[in-house]
Amino acid sequence: MGKRNITIKELADILNVSISTVSKALNDSHEIGDKTKAKVKEIATLYNYRPNFIAKSLKDRTTKTIGVVVPDILNYFFVKVLYGIEKEARDRGYKVITCVSHESLEIEVENVTTLTNGRVDGLLICPSEETQQTKNNGHIKELIDSNIPVVTFDRTINALQCASVVSDDLAAARNATNQLVSKGCKSIGLFSAHEGLSVMKERIRGYKEAMQDHNLFNEANIFSFDDVDHAEARIKQILKDHSLDAVLTIDELLSVKTIKMAQQLDIAIPRDFKVIGFSNGQISKEFYPAVSSVDQHAEEMGALAAGLLIDSIRNPDTINIESKVVKSSLVERESSLI
Image 1 (cartoon, rainbow, N blue to C red):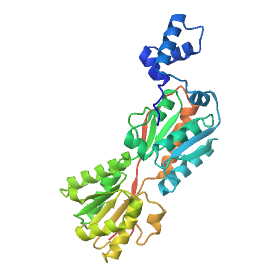
Image 2 (image 1 turned 180 degrees about the horizontal axis):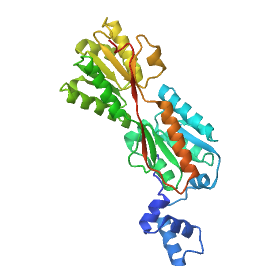
Image 3 (image 1 turned 45 degrees about the vertical axis):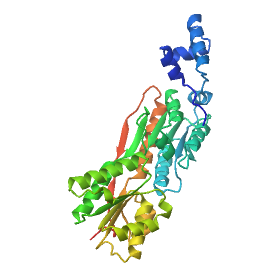
């Protein structure tokens, strides 16, 4: 990717003047003196500033449409989030356009550019895994700096000054781990994936805190999977080599694969081995034995995020950077009930 253009806010900071002054100077407003105009244009040229006409067109027009960028459309969690977004938006008179980043920063930037090309009034963004790992969020920051309504959901970027809606991932993982301990489990493994994501970091932390509280923590019982789709062989080997009596998985697919491999090894579930996963999607409900899972109430998250965005669109003079937390709940099924 090429070098990021300097934003109008950064240009104003360099000149130690307001964004309004920079904008008026660049547009030869009679309100700005010739000396100031010349200085602003000189620095703008020096830093190769180019006005963001995409953002300007978005700010000056109303479409009654919001844009959504999700990292994965095949993930049941995001399907439910989108359902919540769509319902809330339509109830409030807005349409929705959705793009998928496929966990790619480059595609995410393309999505944002496409959506803000005069087509939407604001954006809901769940940052891609690559965006979080590289901390390259200039494309989102530029929208915020241009006063374009933006709300992030599920995954957070602390450096961004915008509203966000997240799940209580740390508390959820801690509670799920405590539940396994309460059933007599002592050697509880953690199967993790996508550890560059903010949500995964919080879940890992919650598991560690719970295990440490019970003096049961063992770093050797944390296993990370780079390729969840092809994890079966490694899971089976782990179950053979380690005397685990339970596993908390921070990915729904991992929980199903873990139960499948345990069954192939004739490990009795849930008598001798218990599993709790995350997301509470359709797979967790339909698999046998059905998987105990943390329900993050994705539909509620989507509706809340859409509501925050629409409120920001309708009240452009009110800046909202609060973080809303959707409380999760544990749904126990056959994989841990005994």
